[in-house]
Length: 298
Image (cartoon, rainbow, N blue to C red; front, side):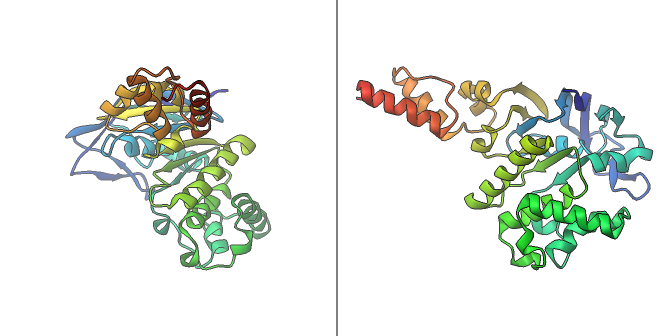
C-alpha cells in the first residue's frame, strides 16, 4: 500500500474574515488566526484503507475531513492527495475527482429531479460523452442497488436511499477515496445499515479508500483503523479494538464505547474475568455464553 492522503504538520484556524481562494472553486483560506480547529495533525491514510475518525462535537473532525479534498486549505502545514498538494490551484479538480465527499444531510447534496439525473450531474459538468455517461450511471446505480429507482424523484426516497443516491453520484466519477462526514447521523437504523454495508462493499470489492467520520461507535468497530481527535489534536491512531480497550481514554474524550464493550468493562470492574477487547455483539454473546456455562455470571 502507499500513502494516499498525507497530513504533514497540518493546522487550521477559522476566522470571521475568510476570503475566497481560487477561481470560483469554493475553496477558502483563512486570513487571520482566532483558534485552531485542527492542531499539528501528522498522519497518512493508505490506499484501500477503511479509516474511521471520531471525536466529540466541535473536536475538529469535520474540519479535518474538508481539508482532504481542498474544501478547506490548511492554515499551516501541507495536505497531499496522491502526492498533490491541495494548495495547488491548477490541480484542484484532479484532487476532487480522486476524493469525493458525502455530507450529513443528503437533501443538501441531491440536485436532480430524478435519481438518474442526479447521478449524471457531475458527469455532465466535466463533459463526459453521453454513451460513456450512461455506462457510468448504470454502474453506479447497480453498485448502490438503486437501479429500480433510477427515474424516481429523490424526495420520494428513504433517508438511506437518498444517501446511497448521493454516493452513486460520487461513484460515477470513479473516485479513489470517499470521505463521509457524519453521513449516517440523520438516518434510522435501517438506513445506517444500508450505507455501512455499501461503503464496506466499496472498500473491499472496489478497493476504494473510505474515511468515515461518525459518532456511532458500532460503525467504528467495522473500520480497519480509527483516529480519535479532541480539541483539534489527534489523541490516538490505532485499531478499533485497541482504542476501545482503553475505555477511560474514550470517555475522557467525550465519547462512549460500543455497548458490548461497556458491558465487558463493567463486568471486569466487578471482578469477573472477561476479555477487555470485545467490540462486537457477536464476540460478546460468545463470552456471555461461556460465563453462563461456567456459572461465572452468578
